[in-house]
Image 1 (cartoon, rainbow, N blue to C red):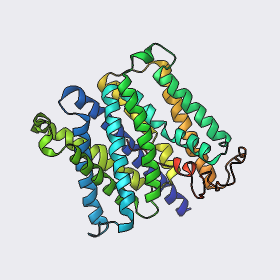
Image 2: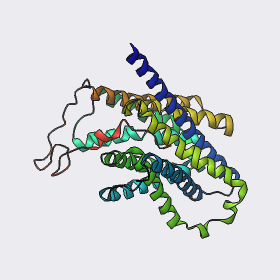
Image 3: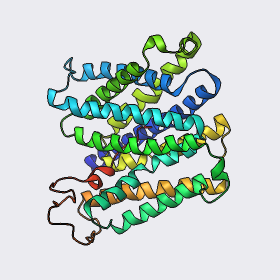
Image 4: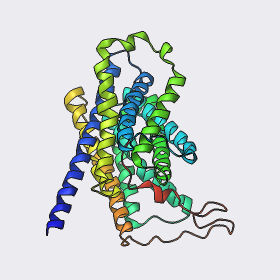
Length: 343
């Protein structure tokens, strides 16, 4: 009886942590949009400060947790470099997207990434997805059509460059998820996130060294906002989701993290006056249902109760079990769900 109560309190604590993290991620997107609209800050400068400040906070925490032993093993540096570049790309493309599109639309487009990863995994392995996964893909695809108004003239009024960066955010977010799962085999999540953020910050500092930053972007009046983006928009939400994984499995964290879409859209409506039409609201709901169904199916798969996946026509004899020529092992389907959002 005591164990059941303790487990219930632990789950409640986990959901509360994910909820706070999702709220902070949603706040981060809206704060960034406001900075782009009302200051001289560019997405490049903001992503530099976000990664520098957030990475420094996480490095301090890592030093406390690891008792000063913060350096990862040498064999992980290659994967960390790739993860850091993916984090740099996903944050920059997301900031570019929200600087040119409504925050809610950019969020919904990026939020559909797990669905497209699952579709790519099915093609990779030459297997039809399970029925719930097919339903999730249909829901997510329909939701994106509704959100962007792809069949209406309104779609032509959306900024083309903003849409390009939104699609780029899908690709870079997919790379981030895949690399994050891969490096998770050899490093704890806190260490991987910390060094990924530091590598991303160093990359952008190489692209835009401090002496090339616009002087107006370094004025003291912007320091509180930059600190908020780094601490509230990067370090704290990541810590919240990492802490939630102590009480919840990754699938449940992924489902709960969908609150970011709701939080980001609600904050954009109240703070920025970005109202969504009824069909866009319906589209966002469909994307959430689709991604939620993916995570639910992942939970069923982990407990051995997933739906069977019928095979497509056999591939060539040179292909291994994964559908990749000459290789076996994990394919993208194994890596796509049960992940948390970058935000």
